[in-house]
Length: 132
Image 1 (spheres, helix red, strand yellow):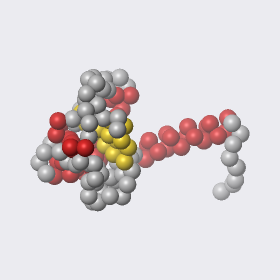
Image 2 (cartoon, rainbow, N blue to C red; image 1 turned 60 degrees about the vertical axis):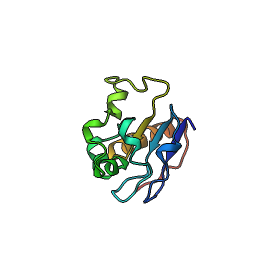
Image 3 (cartoon, one colour; image 1 turned 60 degrees about the horizontal axis):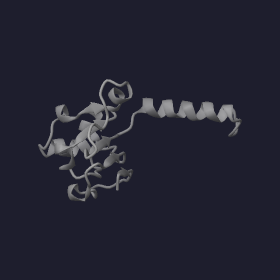
Image 4 (tube, rainbow, N blue to C red; image 1 turned 180 degrees about the horizontal axis):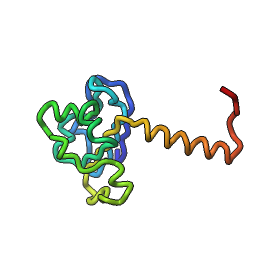
């Protein structure tokens, strides 16, 4: 597959290095604590890795498992998502490149997404209003 997004409570990885074709984009969003894991730690060794928040992913994300095994260091991570969005670093630079997005989630991103959804709902007069 060209795009693979995982969002599971898996405690053992199920996406193996040998099953990922050149040019694939992987987004792992299920590992939100140190016991969860979706990606083979070997995938982090030679591929372009982007995180939502590097420090958090190094502690609890799929990246954390690769670090714990001594395969990579936080300094091996290519960028945080904000750097790509701001244009400070380019995204994919080669067609065959395997890119990995390790996302552990941040409250700021959740709040920003909720604000956009709310604004669109108000504009489209959708949803229900209620008092707290």
